[in-house]
Image (cartoon, rainbow, N blue to C red; front, side, top):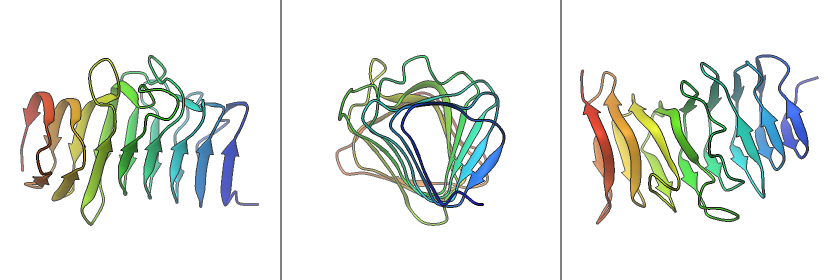
Length: 174
């Protein structure tokens, strides 16, 4: 039976690679446990919810991804990748560290303008190790911080009135 909508309220180890056709909401802790998965809808962390991911693990989200849960500091290993078809949103509901993904990579693959909206950006708050885009249009709603920025096959237009895109390194290639 397919899981159309999944809510993780306790501590769960993800057992195998798989797909969730609908939304995934994490209010507990979800350990990817060496696996990758695809969410057909939206993915969000809420309350004190956290995602724990190791190197090489990938979360593909066809919809929007919202981090408004618990402190992610140290829980997302170097090499963790988020592949997003929708927008990336972070909210300081229970902690400003709800997307403390300093070692992880975010890859934007949407076909329309994708929005990045980080409420509490900064190296001591919410940020990611790298941002890679295959999308030609990115809108920044709040200030954003990534370690590196790279493109793949596009020359992106990045827009955002009076906003800062803070990077340690940039690599724009066609």
